[in-house]
Length: 107
Image (cartoon, rainbow, N blue to C red; front, side, top):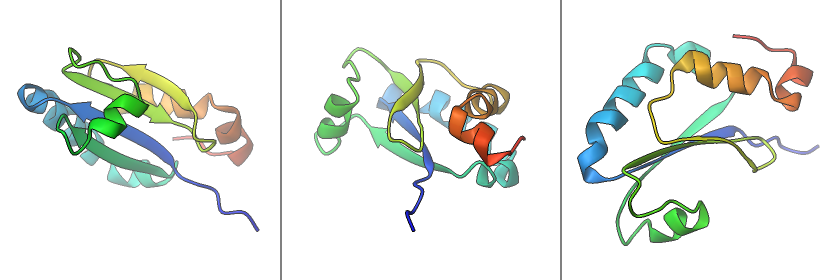
C-alpha cells in the first residue's frame, strides 16, 4: 500500500515581510479544522544561509520578499504567489486539482 504524501504550502519570506507571513498564518489558523481535511502541511523558510538550498530549489529570487507555493500530492508545484492567499483561494485551487476531485472532498 502506497502512502499518499500531504499537500504542502511552502512559505518563503524575508525578515521585513514577517507582517505578511503573520497575516497568512492567522488566515489559516481561523480555519484549522478545514485545513486538516484537504491534508495540508505547512513549511516556512526564512531567507538565510541555512535555507539557501530550499530557496534555490524552488527558484525564489533574492528580491522576492514573500513567496507562497502550493505543492500537490505528486510533489509538483501547483500554484505560486508573491501575495497573501486567502483560504478560499487556496481551497479553490486544491478543489480544482484532479487528485482532489477523485478524493471527493469539498470545503
